[in-house]
Length: 135
Image 1 (cartoon, rainbow, N blue to C red):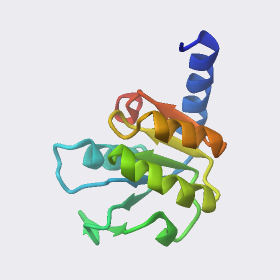
Image 2 (cartoon, helix red, strand yellow):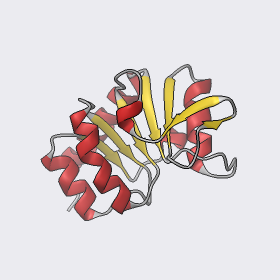
Image 3 (cartoon, rainbow, N blue to C red):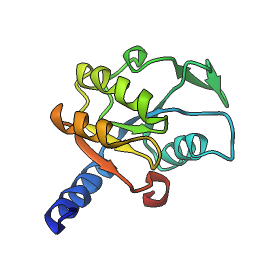
């Protein structure tokens, strides 16, 4: 059961994350109709430093895109997940390895196994909520 306490924690984490200025968007895409594009652009518009991650692209609209989180030239504060749960699950170890503490899972990017692992790894997470809506 989701308790009020649990929801408060998510709201607090959400607030903390929105105050952080360096983000990685895992699952960025050049498809302008998809959230992988919209969130990447919205973060940039709002003045955040944003790194796109997707091995399918080397650049999108002139921005360099990285094939993995390990390639990013500086440490980011937060990761926004826009990939299927199997990929999200695999990415968690790399995220922890990079010293990143915050992960925002977009709807559809997580399952119970992914959330359990993220919590076991000690990550601060937000899920169910859409970052695009929050911005």
